[in-house]
Length: 422
Image 1: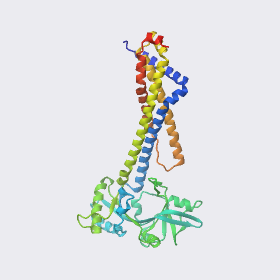
Image 2 (image 1 turned 120 degrees about the vertical axis):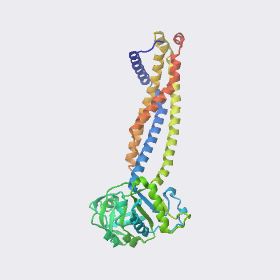
Image 3 (image 1 turned 90 degrees about the vertical axis):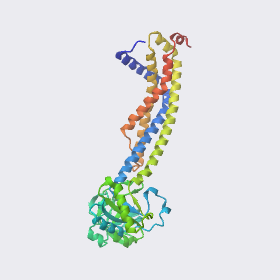
Image 4 (image 1 turned 180 degrees about the horizontal axis):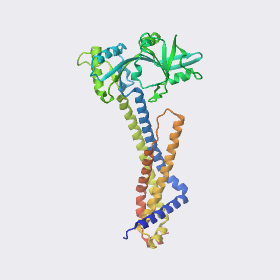
């Protein structure tokens, strides 16, 4: 069999493309319905990738809010969130632990820990300014070192000082949503707000930070000195000791050191189980992976089924097309068309249908992504260029696989028999 030159190959490829586009235009409805399975498959695989990329982006942003170099001493573990009954009999975490930890850290220059900061909080607080009332806000009590363990920056004002902290001054630093909600038409700085039966003067406003994993907003919080918080809410609240570490690459070593210090402070005998938990970001990672894996499995299943159905449909229609054009194939072969030319023609036609389906699927996925971003702005979603290339590659592969058998069948037709075909 004569080998094709590069010039002949380019010419025959161009002619095959023209013929494929002509056949698709001549049978628009049939071509669209044939590509429908591919369209659904591409939408599924694209939206799956978009969701996973968005989850990763939202997760990384949320971890940055927690601080990569901060670990937390708490009553319960983040890795078993929702299983409160496992920890209900544990003794409460006390704010005094922070001062005890800081004394031990100061006496050990080789410590992996930098500073411990107490935090006590409630998630059912309310604040009032004249007729404006905000409900279900987060109220935190802490000390002047809080910003060393927090990622937020102030857009106006300042944080409270050591003197204001130890004297339990009625001052507060508020999140962006609090400032906007209570003072929509005037600056919040210097104003006094009412929390329960106490007046707190706003001395600082945090820059907008966003939501943590879509669960709660860092902009919906009021931070005040620890003593002032206890005057308003009492001491029986959710307590956390925030501990900053010196090197975020040595989190495991820092956790091990903090575990030993807390066992010492709580006077837990050797061999006895801890009655507290040390939490850090990787606990959320272990909970995120099953969600991502579930999305991936569901997306792959839907994609696989859609592409399988689409490939069967394309193969079937291509076989029908071969039958409809048997006399044409016989005539072309009688005039000297090579087997490779006939094979290439039907293969390109199959790939073109899949590519058109892929482009329509990508356009649909982009529209859905845009709609989600507009309707639910806080939902983490990200459309990456890699998904475009992956979707088009899947479309081409589907076209080649589904069109190969009919194309081979067409290329093997006998010219004499084909010309007699009715």
